[in-house]
Amino acid sequence: MSIQKPNRPNVIVFFTDQQRWDTTSVHGNPLDLTPNFDRMAQRGTHVFHSFTCQPVCGPARSCLQTGLYATATGCFRNGIPLPPETQTLAHHFRAGGYTTGYIGKWHLAGAEPVPEPQRGGYQYWLAANALESTSDAYDTLIYNNQNDPVKLPGYRVDALTDAAIRYIDMHQQQPFYLFLSFLEPHHQNHRDDYPAPDVYNTRYTGRWMPPDLAALGGSSYGHLGGYYGMVRRLDEALGRIQDVLKSLDLLENTIILFSSDHGCHFKTRNNEYKRSCHESSIRVPTALQGPGFDGGGQLRSLVSLIDLPPTLLDAAGLPIPDNMQGRSILPLLKGAAQDWPEEVFVQISESQVGRAIRTARWKYSVHAPDRSGWRDAASNHYAEEFLYDLQADPYELINLLGFESHQEVTALLRERLIGRMVAAGEEAPTIEPAPLRPSGQRRVSAIEAQS
Image (tube, rainbow, N blue to C red; front, side):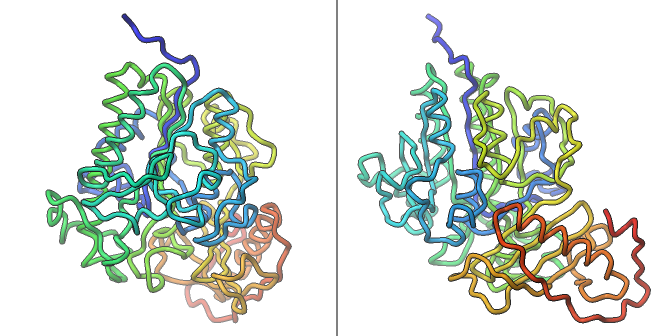
């Protein structure tokens, strides 16, 4: 007897933690770590230029759950729970007739285990607020709906994937929205290392290194091999989810979003792994498959994490709330890109109170020298910090701020950044220009400044 399938597409968010975009073959990594992601990107829609809007765990997750910038929800740093009245994707999907589930790392509550009112409206719950604190690579402890501790067997990626497979199997007859949130390839905090599964523990040590890490070093010589092993196991988990959907005849009616909360710079830009404006912090791998996305090809527009919540609702045929601050990418796939923003906007916290924009060519960032990134969400005064020409310097090794040749581009980017801050709900600040310095042979035309 055949099983009745839901009419609406199922939705699965496959969410990794601290994964660089260039861990994938479709972004040039030569180690073949991600064959399942690469196949998904080639057959579905590959968001080639994908960026977080907040390069730290909790704030980025608040943006993805709500479609609001972290300053709008108040969750501008780790440790601030989502306000109880906040509407999340779980609320919107439930209102649209979906059953909802959350498995893995949450990082948006004020207690462990997470009280039911702080779970963002998800019905099925098998998660921990700070998975890095409740578990280890081969010691996975999370909590169920009753907040009973649940010990899952296997390597942590496999343990959470097994739980997701059980959830999918139990919900074949109704449309479901499942958020599967891994800790990997994030470091294991109490040891400050990257524990790969045993089979990959040393396989990638001393192999290919991205040029920014090769130039700057940081902790990458000791950590990158394990990090790559974690990425490899995550990709195998993605393949398992795809296989299960295929075996249950659900693959063609299920939207899968693969993305990450932020990247990893391996202590090359500050004294830890993220919380900076650099590509290594903010650029992430993103692809979608399923109804609305199959055959979408490579999308070259700049897309922010803030755009993913309205995209998922749009693809599921559900209304997009007026207060969401991103926009669906589905019109881009149909060629309607006329009014798409020419830059992505990034808020930075904890390490500093910072703001940045990234255009197709330029990266421009500012910081508030008299504010604390832990105490203050924003400032009314900033100072310029970085300017990079990503066309000439894709690995962001030369800071161009203050160069006489780049005064026009800096002025234009300054105004664009202020405009994005105001659009995000912040007050228009003053930005202190960097001191002028000679630029040698560098020249920038007015046309280049606009790119």
